[in-house]
Length: 107
Image (cartoon, rainbow, N blue to C red):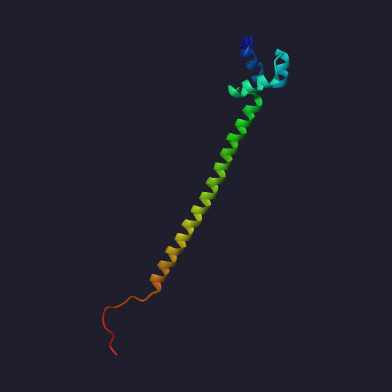
């Protein structure tokens, strides 16, 4: 088995997280760009691109939730309004109906 390379991954990570593109980091430390890319993915480094993607995803989720809440509020308002109209119609119909009498009609 080959001897592991003596690569300063902590320094590489620090440079990459400060915003240096991974390709340039690989050239700077004389290692392959795929090695840097795979290590950054495996250890989930906070590179600017990854941070931006996380923020976009989080704000997208928030805006989706806000849109869902707005839609639910509109539906709830329609339901409540519909119930109020039905209740008002029922009240009007009970007020306009003649009361029933229990006495038999005399003819």
